[in-house]
Length: 317
Ligand code: SF4
Image (cartoon, rainbow, N blue to C red; front, side, top):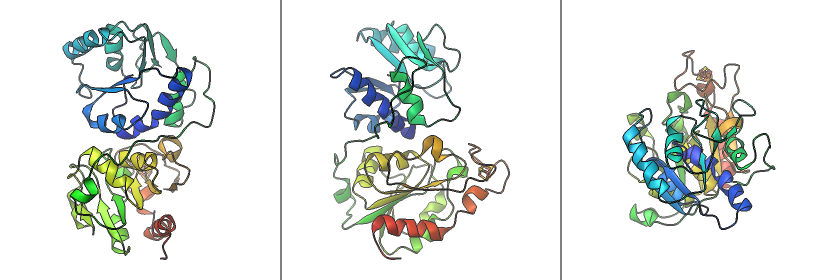
């Protein structure tokens, strides 16, 4: 299977893996994935092996894909599921001559794929979008879909960072862009009377250093971040990969949506508390607000989020 390029998308693809194994118990599922998502895929019980391929976004890298195709041919796979929609993502399974190659039409991939699906609804739930690939084209998957679930507790990260006692994780970043970043994490943290751990990527904005708490932004591996989230009392996050990690690790999640939609990429856990103002301009799916006012996040006040955090923690405001 060719995995998606984003952590959140990779987790929303896990129900597809579960459905494929329901069909063929004991089948081996190997995933071809960029290094940035490999750690989360290795935590999925359905995955036999992760083959890391650093094929950079936007670059064709024809020679690398040809070598990859040859390597895959030697493994004698019988089926390939191509989750990204690009032409180049379907090249290696085709070059590997894998007999059945499944995916969405995407960039007109007739010839590269030989079982081609069409999207039923624009911006439908991503987990449904991926899970449909386990069915014959034109057939909808049985609902409800199983929820993503990953292995946790594989590192000693909590002790390594000297954390003792319960803590709340805040994930104030979103690699996609500022239109997904709630601007009030600092105020939220200053009003909470509990230990706070901040997680995120090295490229997150510098001013996150002003948020009170143990700032581990950019200082953890993805494996560490997964286990820190898994041991937390609850997680407050923008619509980001770490929000999906929290859901798959079974933690209470308070999720904050701006330019994207929880109907499309919402946390896959029934206990999540989702905030989304659903303005007339929303969802625009832009990384930066095209209207300049950023009301979808600016008007999402601290107080209701604070109440939701207390509800998730079972504490009094
Ligand atoms: S256009 Fe609307 S939904 Fe998009 S970023 Fe601006 S306020 Fe948010």
